[in-house]
Length: 373
Image 1 (cartoon, helix red, strand yellow):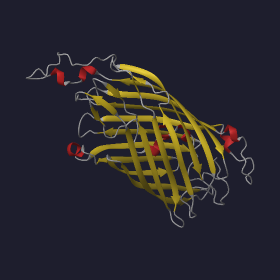
Image 2 (cartoon, one colour):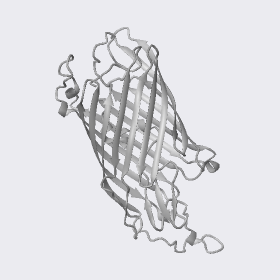
Image 3 (cartoon, one colour):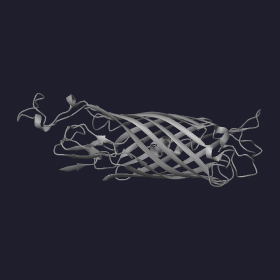
């Protein structure tokens, strides 16, 4: 048996033949959906991040991968998160650390993601509901616990696949038996995930002001807690490995400048596969004084780079203006596949809307009008 690790995906495949797509005569472990700009898909990183940064957050994202090598992976998604009964997130007294109903600081999220790859249109679609509960530990620290339930569907079109057994000695003959015994071309299952996250500094005023400020997250999540069975092949009785995720990020403003540094990391472990991604973004803030409302409005531009271990260098840029943001990244392939890909991994783009305005605060440095952190 040979083991193949497919670049850019947490995949584990045991097979006795190389097919055009990810198909196996023994067993198959399918990949999880993920993106290079992982900070923009918090519920794929940790359910406990649901609603952690904004009262409302909505985003769409799209990725096109390996177009220069084969039929590309196309991955896209949409999500919305919101804090439930946001008034519970306000302090009962501005001079105290107590909140109105700390045990009722809840947030919920709904997301949809889909991925399709290769000639056989091997794909996965999932709808997930996430719920997180936040408990303030101190004025600057809080813990959150998250739970996620998903409905997942996997599909493949076996008729579009080519197998070595269909070579008759002279040419390819699609009428020959391919040696495989598929039980289905589509199946569905429920999936469960849980996580915990620590947050720091969300009670401070907007990042990017002349004073220094830090916001940070660090967490642990486990996906596929129920180890759902994978059953493309009739003889298969394999279960999806649980996936353990470690992650962290920080936004550190540089005092007396309009700049902030955002380091981050993501480590995923799933059976024999692992992925380690580390990066940093530098963000520049631009200020515009409002003449009528007494509120400072800001926009920001960020540029960054990250490295996915033994796979790709990721360059990215994003623009934020008020409640809106748009970002772009590109994977430059650095693995052994670069001989075929010529370094071309794939582009990724996201569009995001949040409320409240992350840059909004009073000139008098009083509590933000809308920010309930």
